[in-house]
Length: 140
Image (tube, rainbow, N blue to C red; front, side, top):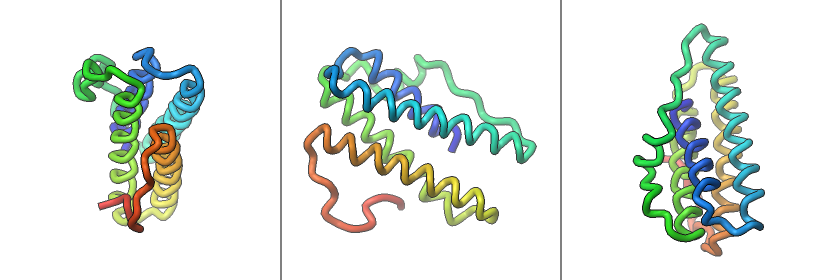
């Protein structure tokens, strides 16, 4: 899960650095990035509390390549990239919830997924895309 938070933080930095976002969109993107920084810090602290060593983030350039940042030409491209990363993050958390024996970990993962659903929904609104018509749209 921490790897996923590293990636989504990098994606938001790519979005900000792209200079493709309208001024009125930047505050939301910065807010969502701050949420993901908090997620990353919380997960790091939790991992250390369990006596393990947290995985480090990869160099930003690796995220730039893996997220195909060179193809981001418009605000819509940037927002679609962020929405994809958010959806991937949501699905990762939801996929893990049932595997945790520690209920606190399951609760944390659920709360993180809820934040990410909020982000995804706001991004969909910014792109003026329709929300999913079916229930249970997230998770695998």
